[in-house]
Length: 248
Length: 313
Image 1 (cartoon, chains in turn cyan, green):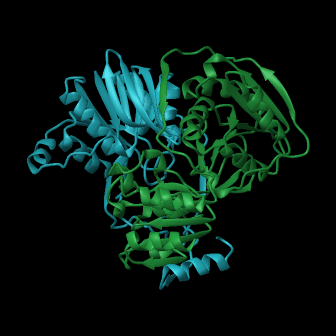
Image 2 (cartoon, rainbow over the protein chains, first blue to last red):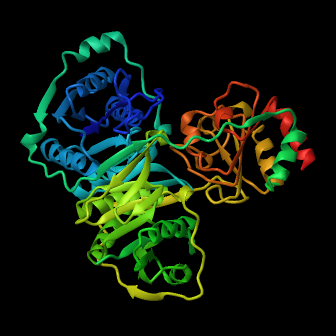
Image 3 (cartoon, helix red, strand yellow):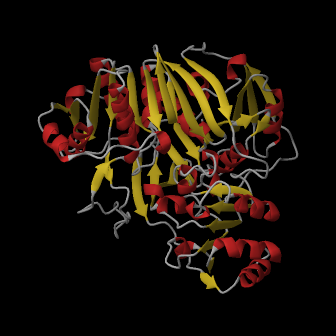
C-alpha cells in the first residue's frame, strides 16, 4: 500500500507573524519556513506505518514554488521514499489543491492520503475533506490515533465533545491532530541520503486543473490589540476589581 | 434568488448553541429567507427547537436512521442535493462543521470561507489566519454559491422568537455509502457548564503539575460556577482530557470572565481567548506573555493565590 502525504511549506510555527504595513499580506521575507507542523505529524505516522510493515511506500507531495523542494527534501530526510513537486507560481486555494491531489491519486492509487488537519498559515482546514469528497471515499479528520487492519482504519478523532471513533474502509483520507505522535528529528546522514532520493517535478499547467471560483482576499489587517492590563498586588485587590466591574 | 441554508448541529435531541450563533451570522447577510436543516434519526424535537429561533423562515427535517450520528460522508451529499435552492450554505465552525462543510463545498465546486468572524455583506467576510495574527477580508464570487463556517466566539446566539417557523419533513436523498462506521464517543468532561458557551471559564496550565493538583482548578471553577478549560501543555501532560483544550487547535471561546491559571500564554492559546470579556492571569513568572493581554494579573504562586481567592469569594 502506498501512502500519499501532502505537505505545505508555511511560515515556521515559532515565528510571530506580522501584517505588512500596507495591508497587502504578511511579512514573509527572510522568515524561517518549515513543513506545516500538522503535515509533519501526518508524515511521521505514515513512516511508522511503513516501518510496521503496513505500507510499502510513502510519497510526499507539495504544490508551490521551487522553494517547496526544501520541505520535500526534509520529508525525504525524515524517511519518505520519493517526492512529487507540483510546480505552481501562485498559492493555490483548497479546492484547486484537492483537485491536483485527485490527479495524483489517479496516478499513484494510494491506500491512504494522510495530511494535517489544517495548515497554520491559512487555517482553512478544508483540503482533506474536499479531497475525500472528490475521491468519493471516507474521511477521518482530526485523528489522534490510527490503527490499521485488513483494509480498514480505526481512527480516534478529537472532536469538541471528546474522542470519537470511526472505522473507515480504505482507501481513505485521514487528517491528523497534534497529539497523534511526535515527529522524529532529522539526522545529518539522512539529509545526505535524501539528496539522492527521487523528486519528480510536474508543472501545474500540465495537469489541466480547473481551480474553481477563487475567493478574493482584499485586505490583511492586524488583529485589534487587547489593551494591556494591570498587575494587581493581592487576591483581595483582584476580587474588588472584579466586583466593581460586576463580574463577581 | 438569495436564500440561506444553515446546517443544524445537535446532540442527544438538543440543538447545539453553535447553531443559534451561526444563525446570528446568517442574519447579518441581509437576506430574509433563512432555512435550517436538521438531519437526525427522528428529527422532530430538534426541528421544533430550530423552528422557534428568531429569524428562521423554515425548517427542513430530514429523518433517517443513518443520521443517528453525524458522519460527513453521509451528510455532505444530502446537503449538496438541497443546495440548488440556496445562495448560501452555512455551518458552525465546530469540529462538526469543520469536518462536514468543506466536503459540501467540494461537491458544489467552490472554496469554503472558514471561520467567519464578521459578515460585511452577503459576499464579504472577515476571517482570522495565522492563528489570529492577521485578519483578512475575503470576497466570494457573486455568481457562485457561498459555503462558510461561522466562528461561534464572534457571534452571540440568536434567541427564540414569538412565532414558530414551519417545519417541513423531507426524506433522505442519498444512499449510505457504507464505507464509514461510527464506533463511539468517549467523553471525559465532568459536570459543570459547557466550556464553549459558559460565561465564566477557569483554565489551568502546565504549572498545575499533575492531574491530582488540577483538582484545584476544578474546585475553583465550581465555586465560581465556571467551566473548566486547559492549555495544550496541560492536555499533553495528561492532566485533563483533550476536549478541555482552549486555543488554536482546541476550542475558541468568548466568556465574559476568563481565568488563565499557570498558563504562560503561547500565541496558540491566546488565539482561543482573545474575544473573552475580561481576562485574569495568575502566573509566577511576571514576564509570561499571558500578562500582555490580561486585563488583570496576579504574579505569584497559584497554590497560594487560588485558595486565597476561594476564601474571598
